Amino acid sequence: MMKTARPLPGLILAGGLSRRMGSNKALCPFGERHLLHHVIDRLAPQISTLALNATGEWGKAFDLPLVPDTKMGHAGPLAGVLAGLQHFRDHPSGASHMLTAPSDSPFFPDDLASKLLDHLPDENTIVIAASKGQVHPVFALWPLALVEDLENWLAEDDNRRIRSFLARHPTIGVSFPPVESATSSIDPFFNINTPEELSQAQTFLKSLTP
Image 1 (cartoon, rainbow, N blue to C red):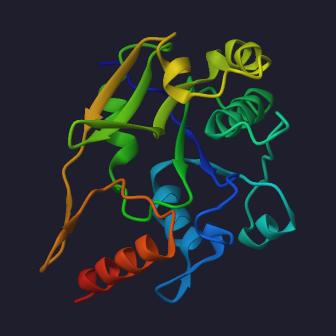
Image 2: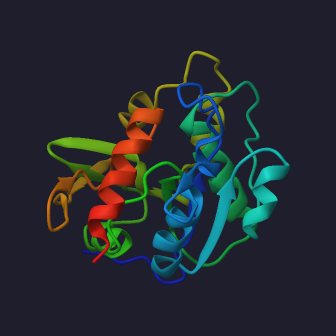
Image 3: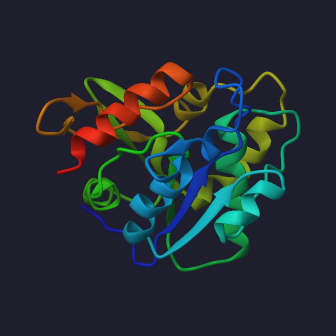
């Protein structure tokens, strides 16, 4: 299998509206810090340069390059992917792909990048994380070469579904096991959308503490 030459750029997707949470999920207290801090700490060691897909002044607090959506109207995660592809196209690093992860999933694997890269066959395939038979497209290696196709795709207002866009391109899914603690386990791509899910994640975080 082909491996993308380092560096591998990474993008945290934090452009959602957090409607079900009632407040910005990225800024929710999680342990002793914000939820987004946990995601940054988990992703940063796996890649060489990191940017944050977010809109608003709040993103400046995390000392990362801000990459706001260029597609207006809250077009969903594909708008964040597009913004990242455009950003890394304009700041070339020699990598063929970028790695994405959302701001609301704090337990994703610390070998996410390496395992996805292990299954990368060429410069045009999207490699997606999976668990329990389900793919998680927001955790993926996205070819930078997709930028023009995605720009054209999102120019049509009806094109918002991420799985419909994936169907246009070669994709590979890579399965990851649950995250285990001494007392329980959780899906590695568990994402937090509601106060109840935040509480569940906080309980699991405590179970990881010796």
